[in-house]
Image 1: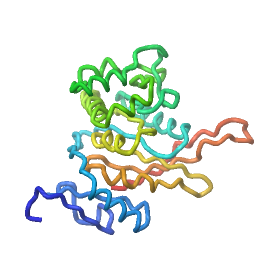
Image 2: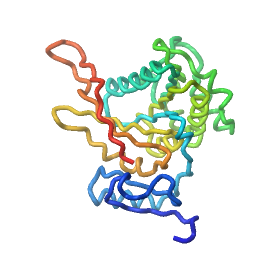
Image 3: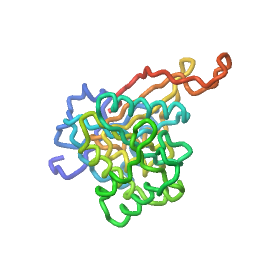
Image 4: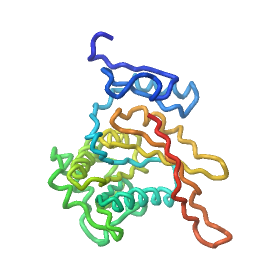
Length: 273
């Protein structure tokens, strides 16, 4: 439309690199991942048109190689933790710093502080955010070292309180984490674990991340079905790059070795946007 203030919804059977529309286009385009059949895509479109649009969040210094990765996916904890460990280890190997923010119960967190006892820093950050504080000054002191050297925010003691805080407060906290990473050495990374957040909260957090990692397991030639995330992926802004990451094997007990199988480090990454 001639009025550039009107939102534009465009469907294309072509992949992003072949449709002739770059990220610098005059309009903001929403691409829907081809994860389901035509009926599922139609239902996704109806929900997107009927619901209020999420606030537009511009990309965060895309030319600086900044990585703030939000992790989602229906995978077992062992596979998810191995992926987080790989990301943080790569950043540390490059001389960067690695930060981890768990938006899930402490029992499922991939990284925990060295000191088991201490203040519930995530809840404190969410309370500050709910009161209108940008949390910039509080983010650094809220990051505690772990055994691996990863700096992590102490998980919320009550996951119910985390769910009740609201997506706006969570987006504020993660935005503060993004700004913290911006001031760290080149190669630094922040990983936000969103495994147990509802869709509206996960979408709010991912709107300020630079990458969304959709984890899938592959076993005996079959991959886990990621179609339930189609609506969430469709809500993400252009500044958040989606990666489909296939990890194998899944976390299974090896009967022959009598121990848990360790997920291989080889991964297949497929940009979906």
